[in-house]
Length: 125
Image 1 (cartoon, helix red, strand yellow):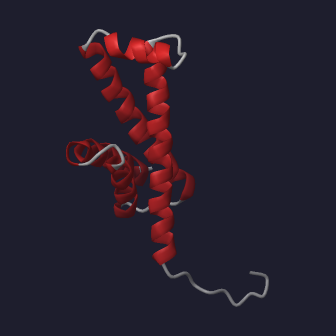
Image 2 (cartoon, rainbow, N blue to C red; image 1 turned 90 degrees about the vertical axis):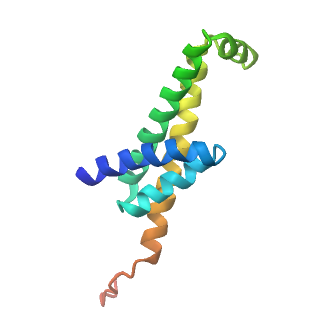
């Protein structure tokens, strides 16, 4: 549980910092690096990236939306056939969450690929 929380915080911090130096896909690298630094397996790593990057993109999109009184987001939402600017923010957060989750899972699988596992002498494996 502690490892999950540390990984979640690292995903948020590294992704937030990456946006200043890289394009949007820098968050993918940051989520993978956070998972490599604090190794966790499978669903736990996916969930940390999913919650971390999805939450970060939701907060950042909400902050930008409130800064301009929803002028741009309501027009983009209308172009995409969405009902309101909040639906656009939720879709943005969902895309960010999936990107973060799969990037963290990729980092986890990368570490497990490099780890050597004990070979079992059992003929059933």
